[in-house]
Length: 101
Image: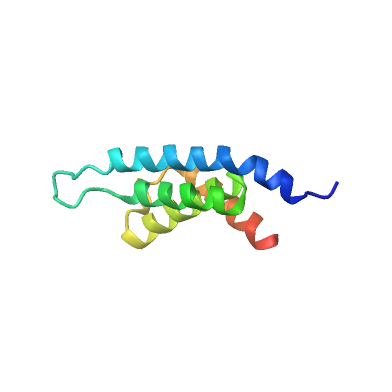
């Protein structure tokens, strides 16, 4: 069945509400840690997920990009050991899914 713009416009408001709720959690979760810098890796990954959900009309795509962003931030920051194996596996699965289409 072909998806029409009416289907997209019906799903957009819940995605915007979900993204707004996620951004509100990010704002309250961005506390400064003992080192003065805080750990914003979860906030940045959550921000990517919250922004891409309404833009792509897909909760799964937003969550997948959030997992990938989180794993990349951990890798770049040199704290790859801090990431849970399940998160890394999910990030890899989503990366393969996006690469294959």
